[in-house]
Image 1: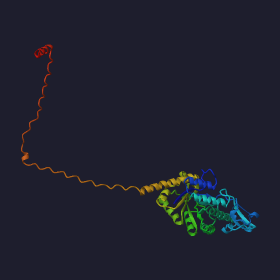
Image 2 (image 1 turned 180 degrees about the horizontal axis):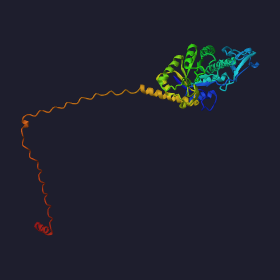
Image 3 (image 1 turned 180 degrees about the vertical axis):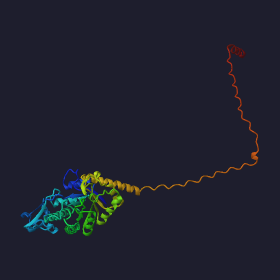
Image 4 (image 1 turned 30 degrees about the vertical axis):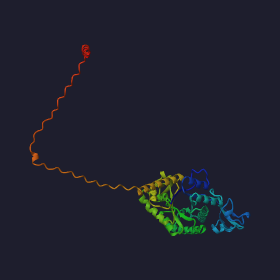
Length: 401
């Protein structure tokens, strides 16, 4: 099965809530959405007296993502703490998110998405830094964990994230350290969501940021429970190629399909190059990477894939990629089911021409020359009878008397 959808609420959506966006995506004929968890506004406070004894997920107008002792404010989220009654002196970490007010809101959104068959994923905040200060590392870890909490509440199957800049030392050391961080995050997410949400690692279009094709594929191979994101604009900028031919792109698609245990997750948009890396994402028709070769590859097999439009024209390019895929699929179907060519019919052998008998010696005797035909002279027409005069008529009457 193949799905198409935008990275965020459609631009044409009149409402700006998450449920409005899901309904609009369904009406446009799309079946996927990448929810954008971009702005993070956490607040950690002590539990109020009226909140003691209640479950964190049941508090109205509050999106609580972490509960713990007051000395460990903003600690690691755990499923047990969010499912246990709040105790006195507990520290609650809440998020202010424009797309959901509380867990009841998340649950209604999840039910709507399932009813309309819209597959949800969630993208964690873009800025992460695991090699800066200790506070920056702690904040980056918490942001990805909070994204996992929201993804679990929404019923999203993936929490997508970048991994930020390399460290100041050797690049191989940075990759090794990031592998250990991702191992911890993936293990925490598998335990928290009971395997319902997986961590998806996205490549980067900048050479100073973790995420080359080889690094992403090696990371997901080594860390259980992670999947790669095939973001072709980022890879094109990183590798300085436009992937113009299907033959050039097919091996990459096969690599990511083999590394993915489940549906292939794919991001697409136009892209402009500048210097050694990516300059900006653009609409597909204006970018240096075309979707047509990818559509030809996807149409050649029954791939299980989700295509997310991350271009500035969110739903417009989502529908455009779907159109290009359907055209490629139509060409493939026409080729496979074309009527057989008519068999050439062998020409019938010509009837033998009867041979003329050879003339005998007698036939060579001279014959008398035939007389020429002379047409008979035309007959002369008889003269018309003369008209009788008055005397002749009188004489005739006398004879009758």
